[in-house]
Length: 341
Image (cartoon, rainbow, N blue to C red; front, side, top):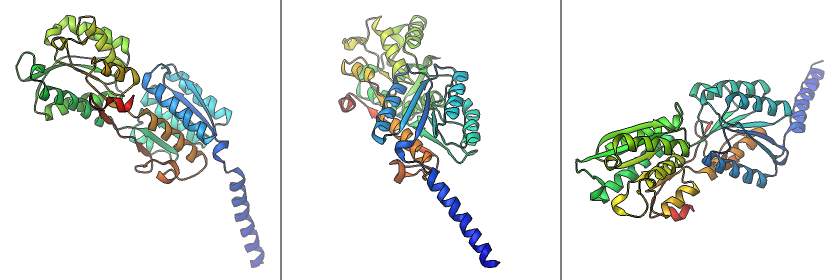
């Protein structure tokens, strides 16, 4: 009887093992469903293009949908992917506070979920063993943005136009409540102070990462405080920096006359921003590495869908605390911008 029990026990173990093997996915069998908060965001366009290119190399299937900046639509898109049988979902949330219900959808379906660009709260990340975040530490980009302004003021005596020893600046912030907007703003200000400068904020407002909104906001600041008082402009992303430049150019600034130049910095190192730098319209930016964020998202998703441990060996990227893939920022200046074009 004991031998018979051992036989059945061994048979059960083998059955489970063979069942697991039967259902194990190969990389080219993986279906990934991805949601991007909106397709007309310049930076996220770079991320999704690199996601597609990486999946083409792997040979699996990647479907990407435009959530059109509408969280209810994105919720439905995730439901649709689950119903379709996606093996894993990648989500760039419209609203980062929606990460919890999105995670719960994936958890109920038993599939992995990879968040990108907009970091969920820590408690959400700890509530599921098949959840990862792929992005960059926003405080790094804020610090580097502020350092670009500090370096400019230290190298250019005329940057302090009124000779009061302070930097009079305008801040264009991203989406209200977005961790990148909060941290880029906070740390860029901190970097300028740490650089030894007193500061005077002439104006600060939300422009939602959008070039047109930023142009309108900047025109409002120019009217309110006078362009002659503005000594620097910091924007949480390149689209808003380019919007500010459009407003400055409408006043005859940043068009080649050194006497009519206000340093403007952004974040992302998008192609339009690099082009503006090549023309001398924009002081600098910070590379938010869309290429590696896109590649990492797909590598993590495919490894997770295949049931592999998500680590550097399986994805090519360092994984912190078993859940976070941090892609570093790089400062882009007039000396090195051509490297990124």
